[in-house]
Image: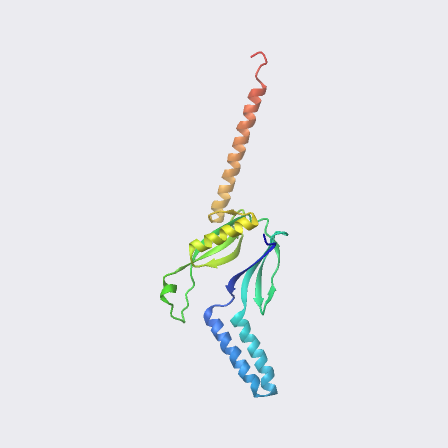
Length: 197
């Protein structure tokens, strides 16, 4: 089992912005050929275009330290803050409507997939979430959720609104206390039984 998992989620910016970044990149490269002044301006323009075109996001998981971070990746350099995931004992798959591009026509395959399926780590109350992966097929999202659960020793659950999850938690605690109370009551009954009987 790998001690460190790096999982790419996707690009930071949507497709039209990435296309704009590519245009800036090639324009900047072209300007660098015009002279020294053009060289400086072209480099900055090309770097800015490359940032919008190629910057991606992902998640790193340190299994030994039980820490996780969302990272931004640019030119192979990953930056992000590590946090402990011990307070996120669950993993789930959430269905959301897919963001559609208003500028570009969609293919038939894209049009047939109006939803995206997000794999999240969940806090006990389901209020805290950490995005781990985005897929367009539920089966694949569920497979990835199961993989993360096995690697990180998490429990796969269905997402519930924070209010329902909290109510369920109190209900489970109440049932546990009730069982404990009945068990103790039974113990006391046994203790009080006369030896003569």
